[in-house]
Length: 447
Image 1 (cartoon, rainbow, N blue to C red):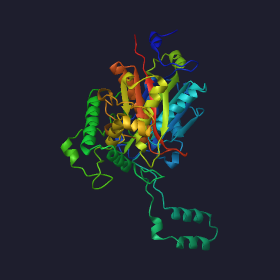
Image 2: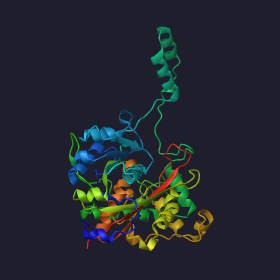
Image 3: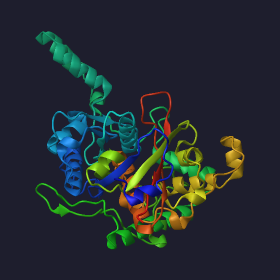
Image 4: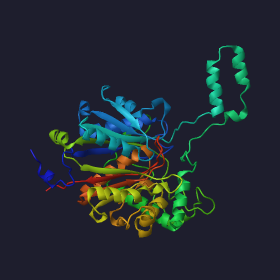
């Protein structure tokens, strides 16, 4: 049986399965160090999976595979996808694996799910992401680690005493994790500050965009538009049902903050940057045939994606500028065809610099080898329910939030095409560094 709304399908490819987003959920995104502080990453991931099961009522044995993205791994649960799946009650016969690709880790989880379905390996895959910044691994110094490992292997009392005697006070200094590029040692905030300066993005422009993000997020939250958020009973604490980082301020208050990275003349501050966040997300991705057979009405068709890479020594946060024209060309669309834009807001300066680069013929010709600019998204279609600056940014979980938000906005606004873009730090074990991942999402309206 062919559903009437399926007749409107566009961008389908011959001999390629139609792959659909059935549903997406997330735990509330909370400021690190708040209500989730006593949990572990798999607790949040498990809550997201259970929320997805409850929302969809899909039988657990129908799911063929589970993939989760994360960035800073808890060493006790390195394959957090597996631990969360087992905790959520999925069968131990369902394979699960974890991927890491910096801020686009859950994007990679979703594209991996699409690949499994397109290859005919699976019909239903759960993808998601989790990040838990309230408790991150803190290591001993390398010298101390080497001494402790040697101590564990020592066979005689003399060997042990000798090793203990070699320990110096400096060896006890811990190694703290940093949101920085391994290859350059540059923090992401420093990169954002440098990028903003290169494109002449002022402090006022950044603060104005951050204020816009918080104001739109507050409006969406109050209107009940953030449908992907599920309530979560935190063990020993209250039920959490909404994000807690949405805090509209004023330009006057924001102007009082000092630069956070490049002092004293930088323009990136705590107010115009995304904050450290705890949270998890999950989406159900299926072949259209399987979804319809089970009675599901897909929220969106996942049509295409592109990964691009940038030199982390240059402007690694310009991924959206490089990737957007590529994915549009693959689909045969232009910017004017897109109804909904959702870009990851790592920093207000990063967003504004990308918008300026996308609107520059000179940049397109000089750096991209293109004849002309791709153009900028109209702001009346751009991140209308807030973004990472206000909703929060659990590194590994944001991609699923972006994709689900596009689907919900398309439904609410009656649009057909949506575009997701996200920049990321160098986060893969290879000789390239991901600059962005781009989804083209097609939602088909009911007749």
